[in-house]
Image (cartoon, rainbow, N blue to C red; front, side):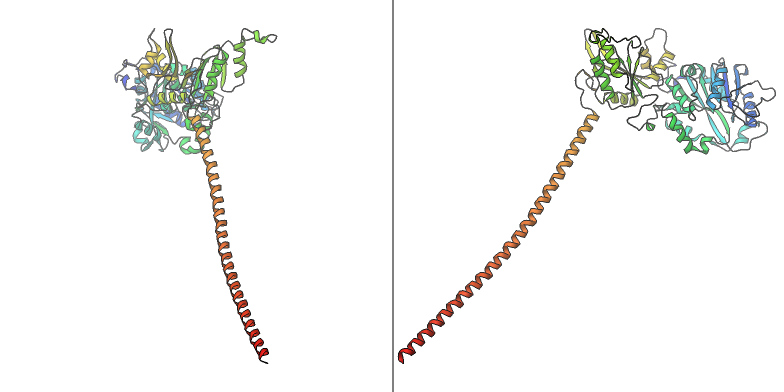
Amino acid sequence: MTVPGRVRGNDYRVLAPDEHFTPRLTVSVVIPAYGGQDKLDLVLAALARQSYPAGLTEVIVVDNGTSPPLRLPAGSAARLIVCDRPGRASARNAGLAAATGEVIHWLDSDVVLTPGAIEAHMRWHHAAPYLVVTGYIRFTDAQVPAELPEDLEKHFEPAEPHTWIVDLVERTGGLTDNPQRPFSLHVGGATSVGARLIEAAGPMDEELILGQDTEMGYRLGQAGAVFVPEPAARAYHLGPTMRMRDKQPIDRVSHAFVADRIPAYRWLRGHPGRQWKVPYVTAVVDGTAGYDEVRATVDALLAGTVPDLSVLLVGPWDGLDRDRRAPLKDPDLELVLVHGHYRHEGRVRLAATSEVDPAVPFVLRLPAGWVPGEDSLAGLLELAREEGLGLVNVLLDESSDGVVAARLERAAAFARARFVAEPGEDLDDVVDAVSGVSWVAGETTGFTNGAEPPVGRRGAYKARVAAQAEAARLAKEVERLRAQVAKWKDESSNWRKSAVELRREVGTLRRQLHAANRAQQNLRTLVSTKMRTALRKRLRD
């Protein structure tokens, strides 16, 4: 059953914010700026027209090294600070450090808000403290006016919408239909975030050259954020963005960096043997359970069909002191063996606690000694993704001593659950409410207790490759034998031709012999006749 105010997945419609809410939350509008004094003046003038109470709004302009320095218009209530470290992320972090609001509203120095924009944002933040709200920006080619027009629409239209955001929102039912990457909505041009969320996720990554908004959006999602598109929060961007002008080279640079930090971008992680700064899943295993048990589990995990994985071995590694005189009698021998075996394995980290990097999207907690099949982890991840589950429990064993289970946890779901849980409430129950919980049997998902794991996709692939190689070898042998048979047939045909010719020659010889015999017989007859005639003649004489 869904508890009112608890968002399941990203379906924020359950919050149903009041159109006529009473403003009470403070908001800090952070504007990083480099040059563009004329546009900044218009942005500040638009902020002065906002319907949200000025007493609850602070505006912080961060000059990121402009020369000559930026200035505030006369009568502006904004604060101006300077950040000498170049880069928009650095400027935003400087503004964030100076901000005091319960909500942080990022705003670019060339984005002019319509009068009710901040109020439309804040209506949502009064409904829940874990929201990221993005307004609808339109891009105008209109000439930049000297003063802010009274009718913004009349001056800045026609303008182009933020097409990819509109498309994303439309094809996912306003981001409510289990979108895979709702964090993409976090764009710095006109987005507001609950300060508690930013505190949990951390500031912008200043190491990034581009893609800082998206990367921070990802971490906000990992911290439990719900992403809300608000069409009533409208704004005009004065001219095209840098990405609109040079999308392909900007994506090339951005993807080179964010691939290491955003595991959700699976298409950027095509290399099967690479290790990444933030893995897709971390498996937590008790490193004190015995060398053989730990090795059986860890080696099976590393040999599985999910290469984007790290293993966290938990144990008292810092206090480990090897007995070098009598190592076989060392009371910590099992720990020494585990430590020595995995110390230099790049995908294994030896740690004193089970704390996992909050940026890792999935955490598998697996008892040592239980061996997953090659496809076990891949199957659990697929189930969690397809059904949007926050927790998949794997029943490994059940006896009078209790239940032995593994757990695949979605970090974002547990972070959301911690935001909304009541004191003393079971966190798994809250995860079930905000994301969903499921149980599966270990034997049907390929888990065994120390035995050889069942053959999975990788084993089947190897067997298939071997079978294909054997089939190819046999096919070549068949071709060789066929060629030999063809050769023998040719030789047999030649032998038959030779036999026919020999028979012909024998026949000719026989005929010649027969003719010779006849000629010899005729000669004998002639000689005999002549001799008799001669003999008779002599006798008469």
